[in-house]
Image (tube, rainbow, N blue to C red; front, side, top):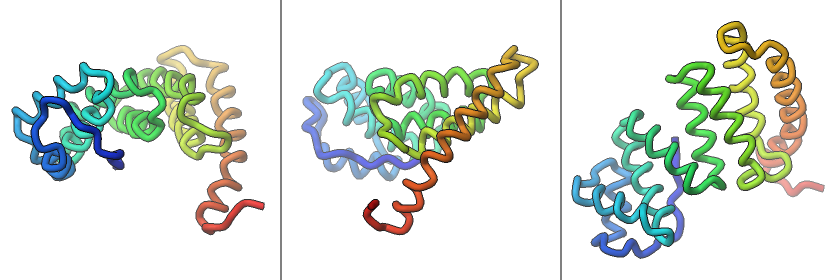
Length: 175
């Protein structure tokens, strides 16, 4: 789970934003700094930056339970953040139930118009995880025919993203 922090935003009421950013990346936020960031989540202008700092802090502290909770809230507030969607789906795949993975991935893919463009490889990755989860628990959660549909969607997405990933890895301009 890696989070690139955006351009600094003044977090009203939170002292020393740059210091907090460095502390969050190292997992060293103090309780009062976390409390200030939680207050900043309530203000529309500062919520995305505050949320990213809290996610970075939880990631650096390896606190997966807190990170999962913050990430779920983050994607509700900022549905266009595809990286957090992907990290959340992957974390749920590791520690959640197959049903949770399928439901969360469906939500992420429904919101992909906000965060994915054309041949985004994150879409294929999410579809792969959803297919694995559905296949693993198809009897338990009653998916049946959905597994085949998920597999076909994943195959199409993988074929669409393969050229984009190859061009990106080669660091060349697409013709």
